[in-house]
Image (cartoon, rainbow, N blue to C red; front, side, top):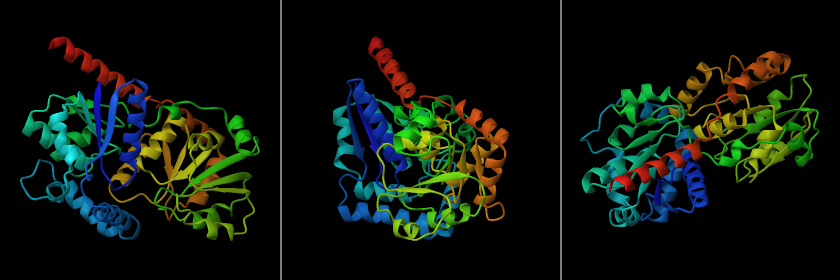
Length: 375
């Protein structure tokens, strides 16, 4: 089966989804490639898009929130010259255009711009491929309304159907398989075994604090705050690739034992070793932690999609949300003091396991075989 996966430079979640799918399709022996829809753009353009996005969400969240809420009100495919259409006219890659000639069996878009481009190609060139959009948050991001008419839309939860209807996307084409993540996240070892492998005390409670791929969380401030509580636990801090906060963290004098790590390739083992994870609520990270059955404390969501991730998971009692008036140290202390609350949340989280990537790939292979049988 020939599969092409479309992704986009800005952000990291949809790129992780693309890599997870590529990895699993390759295990099945399929011809698969990931295409960046900014492929033909200069490195300057790619860097600009990525840096602008990072700056907006990290340093100008009010501006990003204004843009998101304004664009989110759109519910139909627009004839206006939108940001997405301008971008597409400027930088649509040769690889995207060549999809018409390649005639893949399946094309998957993991980001809204890429999905809208795929929708345009599907309707303009009558692509025969099974065309799939993957929504990598617990809501429907602006511009998905321009990705109308795809064959299927993969969503993390049935609750996303409400937002699909609001965006006039066909809910009958919704596949609530979960956000595709690496299948290894559905395989776990016990907390004690994971802690022994990492050199941790197997009997101590362990809290995992994650800065995010763009160092969105101020882990220095958070570590200082949670260190004030009297509870007995050890702390792991995972930093971004640049290890932005390492020096500041190492200068702290903390009473709790702390392990500071940069980028790790075996992040699943760190998840397994942890009791509670403090993180920002990105769609991919939350999906990985749901697969691992780990209760989460959310902090500082990006306005828009991450705020909606918080709302969806809180309303299902799958996570907790620290705020200025209910700070992270108070919330962590409450969970450590109340094992019944912790265990009931952990059980609910464990019941959400979906094997999302396998389910999607198996579904698409079945649909491909059905199409072959009718030709």
